[in-house]
Image 1: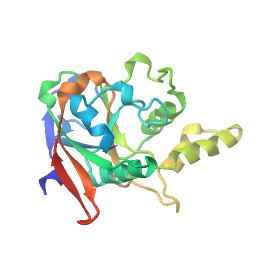
Image 2: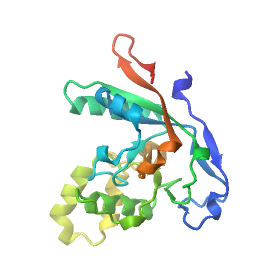
Image 3: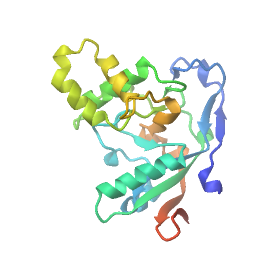
Image 4: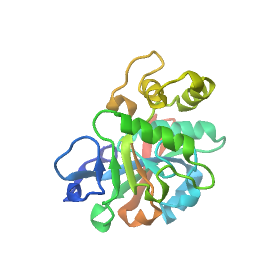
Length: 233
């Protein structure tokens, strides 16, 4: 089914711009997805149709890459997020929004932070700093220079547990970021997770980027058919 597929778009000449930060050693054109998926609940569909990027709706704390509109190229990953959103909000229906990207409409690709390939110390530091230093007053470890788009792996879903463990034992921990890296990249059985197993996320951090994105459809789960069903936006 085409709703579950994605392809990629080349954005030329980005690597020649000194502000583009790519941490995987790429030496070719920047690749941007044709489609991304966002997990939400049914009551949010109408506002998203009006405006996809609105900082008023972004959670200020406890996000890997700071306040942003979080998406993924994986339909299955978005389905997992939507199911969790439904579990947390009684009476709501989990939904997946399919969004088409039009990079040719946007000229701001000079401020992209992309952690591609395997995980690395800079990825760990970026996540830990934003998990700890972002607050409801708008504080951000990047200051006013936060990237417009951040692309990278997800921290494992145990972050709250890991933070509690660190806070209890921080006086005995010599290297904060190594402590988090070891726990962020392992499953509950202690097995190391590679970049694909951790999952992917693309965070749009600038609400001025609405021209880049267009909502084209959304999905709800049909219990009788045991599948996600697509609806026109």
